[in-house]
Length: 427
Image (cartoon, rainbow, N blue to C red; front, side, top):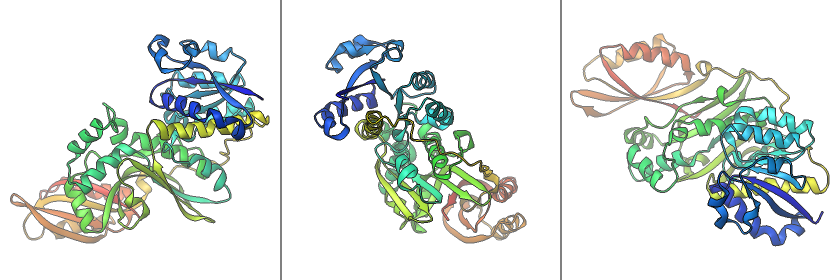
C-alpha cells in the first residue's frame, strides 16, 4: 500500500499538533509503516479561517459527509472533544468501516463500551491512548504489556492543572487563588477550570483506566469526585510537618468487595514515587501481581505530548490496516464487578478543626469519635485563632460512613466551631 489517507476532525491545539507530527514524520513513514499517511480531509467549522494553517487548503471541509463518503479515507482522527457530535461522528465512521483514533476522555469514559462494540462488530480499530495522561503511554501498557498481570491498583496524578496549583502552594507558599491565577496565565488552566479543580477530568480518566485494568466496566458516574478548592496553605504546612504531601489522586482498587473508583485530595508519604511529581507533570502508578509496582511519568497534556499519543495510535492502526488485521484489539471487558460505595471505603483521615480553647474539649471530641467507631491516632495543637484553638487530628483507618456520622455530631456541638478540612490519607 503506497499511500493511506486519514481524516482529522478538529484543528485546535491537539489537531494542530497532530498535523505537525504527521508532517515531520512523513519521510520515515514508509520504513515504519510500509505505507505513507496522507491527510485527505480536515473537518473544521470555518475552512476559510484555517487556510493559512495547512499546506493544501483544499483538504479543509465543514461537512462530515465529505469524510464518511470518501472511500480513500481509512482512518479518522477525532480531536474535537465533547460527547456530541463526536459520538455520532465516531459511530458513523466505525460503521462505515473506518478505524478511529480519539483523544476524547469524556466520550470514552461515558460511552466507550458502546463504541468498542461497534468497532468489533465492523472489524475496525478504535484507539484512545491520548484520552488519559497526554503523552504518557498507559492505555497500551495496561492492555498489552501488563496483560498477564492481575492488576489490583491503578493510582495517579492525571491532571496537570491541579498538580501545578498544589505544587505552587507546597513549594512557594502560594494560596489557592494565586496559584490558580498563575496556572491560568500560563495556559495550564482553562478560563472555566471547574472540570480540573473539582476532579471531574481526573474522574473520567480513572474510569477509563479502571475498566481496562480490571476488565469490568467503570463509567464516570461510578467515580466519587472531590476537588482541591478547599485545600489551604495551613493543610499543606501540617502535611509537611507530618512527612506527607497533598496531591489530587485518582485511585482505582479491585478489592474483594468490589471496585473502588475515586478522585480526591490525598496525603501521601513524601517518599512515595508520586510525591515527587511536580508542576504540570502526570504519573500513573500500577500494582500487579507479577510485575509488582511500576510507574509511568511524563507530560500529561499539551499540543505535542498529546499529539504524540494520538499519532502512536494512528501508526498502530495504519500497520493493522496494511496487514489487514483491523479489529484485532478487543474491548476485553468480560467481568461484572460491583462498584464499592464510598460510604463503605476505609481510609485514615486528616481533620483540621477550630474548637473552643478550654479543658475537656478533646475528651468530648474523642467521645464522639469513639461512639462512631473512629479511633484517634494523633493530635496536633499549634495555633490559636482568636480565643479558639486549631486542632489537627489523624484517625486510624475507618469506614467513610463512620467518619461522616461523627462529623455530623461534631458540627452541631457547641465546642466545635468549624471542621475546616477533611483529607483522606493514603494507605
